[in-house]
Image (cartoon, rainbow, N blue to C red; front, top):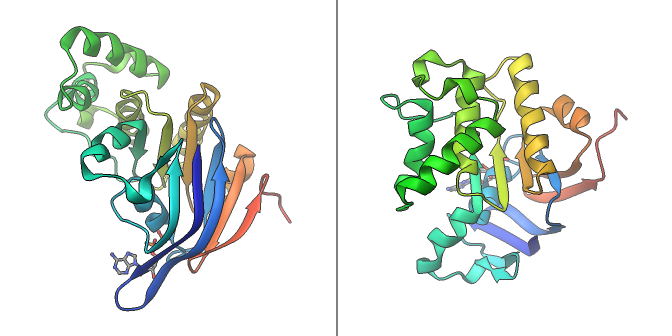
Length: 225
Ligand code: ADP
């Protein structure tokens, strides 16, 4: 599903944010990307969503070479990839359901389709009874679920979660991890970027470890040793 082949990203004048990184992620896999600050995790995501282009190497998603993707095809690609960031951004004047609907409205989805998809994705994230609540009436964990529901509204093939539990207490964090696992079990490829090694251990997913721009480990799962 995702292939990086000898991908390097250099920022001027001489920062090697990624250096000759090669890996493959299969369709339906769940994978955690770990590494200390400055390891290149954000750069890797920005390359995947074509916010940045690699300096060298190739990146493909499905059969699509995205290192050479044409600008006009970028929105189409972005819709295949749902992204959830740490600082959940909801529209404060809209209800939870309207926040999800908005993501579909902006790409011109028709109203009957929106009315069908919104309850479906709200149900997946366990917020059936919270459609009409505004962001300030939701807990941090619930807001993050709305953001995940919004990312799922386009039925992406890939979900990228960048430190999705960074601002949450342990219980809410655990809930979000469980939700990501459930989404993965429905056959969405999930990429989780995190500092939280304990959560990654519990997840028992494959792990890529980056350090100073290099891929230094690719493990079937993290162990305590
Ligand atoms: P991480 O997300 O793992 O903390 P990043 O991908 O943000 O790592 O950064 C990797 C390296 O690239 C760091 O040394 C960082 O300072 C550098 N870097 C990231 N983005 C830019 C940029 N836009 N311009 C210059 N250097 C950058």
